[in-house]
Length: 292
Image 1 (tube, rainbow, N blue to C red):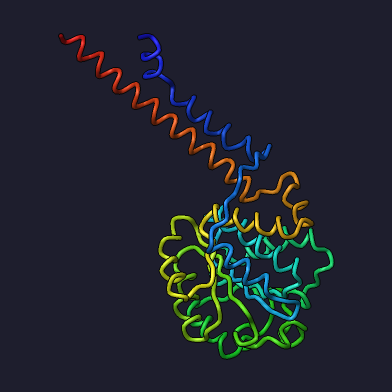
Image 2: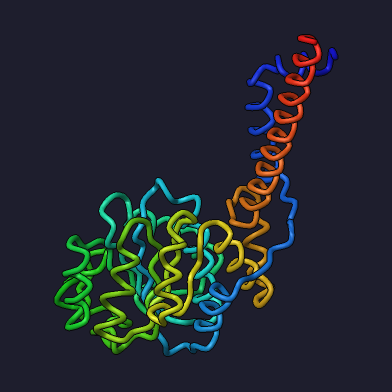
């Protein structure tokens, strides 16, 4: 059985090469596999969809570069949704390792598609603050005292949007794009104490622990990993066709492209597992025959 000998002696570098090709090609040439939307993602979309130009959403960038492939697309999609509806946005970060940079980069990627969105009027960027739990609680009393100036050094009292936003009572929703435990603090501390609705966009490995908060009503929506991000992208594209042009732009990494690559890689891994098992059992059968 020559084919079996070749299969068992296959150089693993061929496998690495196939995985690399399977990852790169869908990013360069998007396939567009169908994305099914789950209720937790739809619930967050509907919550923002019900808002108007006078409503304010707080987006907290509580992650760093290590989870950016999963968190970046969901942050971009929610930001695009808010800007499409003219919902006002306040950005900040409580994550010390690159969180504020993630907010800067997300804002830069999205603003190029919304040239009429104005800083200080349509959105405000508060920057980073240490002491996550203490910062969250103090913001419930007075945001201006916690953040005397915004990311760009302007006093909050001079930022038009922040002149009418001083506590959580002046906001409709908090969305935390999170790695680690900060997302849980928004749900179990701030939602419980200040009663502001909270949603979380987290990595896939963290998603299971957030379902308890979702089912208990402490969260109004959940984006779990790249799959959750792709669901939100799909919802925004379907509702706002003008946004689709941004997602078809060459060179822009999106969750839908990422899911194409992930689907192909998972299929390849399954094929390799099946082939390895076939080779193993065929080899064992041949060895048993040889002993007789």
